[in-house]
Length: 476
Image (cartoon, rainbow, N blue to C red; front, top):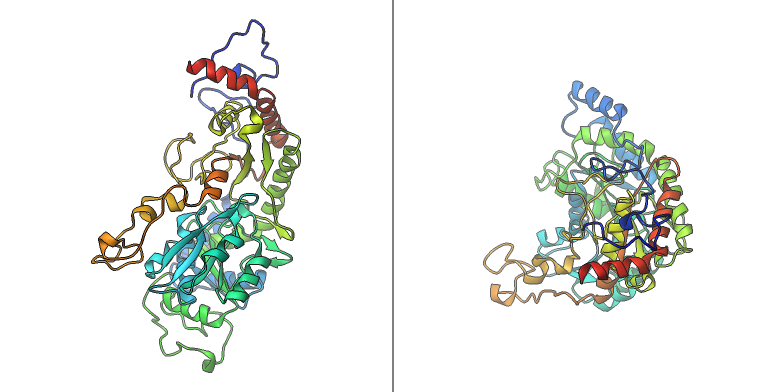
């Protein structure tokens, strides 16, 4: 989108948005349109040193002492009896579902607004995803909508603590107790978060985390599972850990009489979902920094959240009573076009980028705080490459996953009864996600970063009507 043209005979440039010719709040250039606002470096020499030392010790496979210690600290930190490290967060969620006995013919309820790894492991177990709405105030799973979607086939509910915000776990666990449907907590965005004093991941029947490269605790690639349920843990070990028995490598020693699969280790099912030891070594260093990281991010986010209430057109995402968000994998705010004289959200995000503030309005942006894409590709645009899950072709058109009409997403043409989703099926989530704008997520902000970002937002809000009129003039 090019800079808009307007007559400046009557309008000075003082305090105008940069998109209208004003001075940007951050110094930008053609070579550096998005200045580096975060002085934080996720990977340092400390992580490099432990990787070097573990390599020299040939700790390159299996359950090393570093892995054992990390899992011990994880279960102690999350107040669970069991914890297991895995190759990635998707493997952790797969193991959680397998641990709960999800299988052919079952249904798993999940919000449509999340990363697809929150639900696609169900497909590998030949279970069917059932998508639900989010609460438009929090962007988190709406337990009232979940209630309407529970059937006799429902085997699990996936509660995603999206962007580090915390689900209404009290309501979800009451629903779980009422219906007998267990809750999986997807904590991939919420390392260190809690609800009413309890660590997230320890409230539902099982918790899962991603330790992917851009997460608050990074292993490069890795995942974690934690639970108090011995059966879930025992089954997760079968799926993920060759040469790991239930009473080995530092796990709590259990009475063999309480086990259901003691006859199967050390091979289990022969699937190797275990984490790479060096990755866990890196994560062990990252975990030591987590509390400081959360303090810094929380301070920055709260400074902006508090002031947003004084700026027309933008609103902070709400939090449930007792929630203590953390990690903050993204920083979305709600945008109200009707309070901005009809200025479209993509134009608002574009205007912020012209101020040197990396912002976008994709429902699931794969971005990190200083504007470096997680995956290769261009910097953010107004396109939507990661739509809501129910609008993906996979879930709209179905797929004969196992061929010959065998699979949870087989339509009638494929020999099944899957009906598929369509845009409009989850209107509340669709509407709220179209009104989101993502601000930079900063851990160690440059001086006055929050104040200057707020200045940029305020400039655009104050001149929204002029922006709309100018936009109309340039499209005539």
